[in-house]
Length: 186
Image (cartoon, rainbow, N blue to C red; front, side):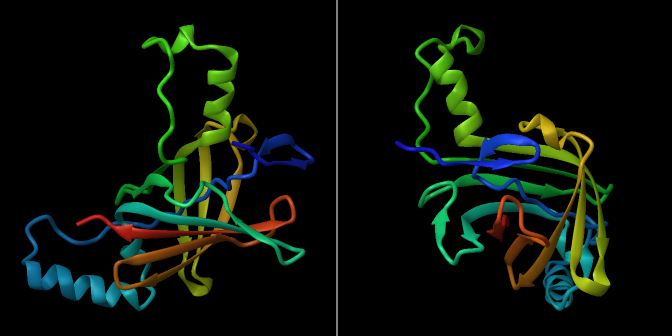
């Protein structure tokens, strides 16, 4: 399997875009199912509160500025994005079907196995803020599998259609824009 990497001013990094979003909380745990459904419908109209919850990754497509594109995490990526009502978020994504390490102990993995983690997995967490006026969410990354993103802010555009969320980077990263599609976990 060939893994593409991109050169940036920050050094070399896997082509899989690290993306996510966030929002501030809402719906009460005691809400009636009908009220929850009504809340989600209202949120689908663009309210930042609609982002709160857990989302399952459906696809990641990276579109290059030259017009080419590729499925960044393969055809069946795996991952979850969680936006808490407390203003914290976390995202983890990986290629489907990653092979287990030969040893059951991570520290005993071969250099090749350790390198595959960087190529086939991405994750980060931190605070987030939502700018509803332009449907932007800013991730204030505190920890990341890509250490160059620790302490970095990443703005994302969000679009919500029912139980589907699409996120994409506001500005090109390494001459590309990545589109991530998620489905709300019920």
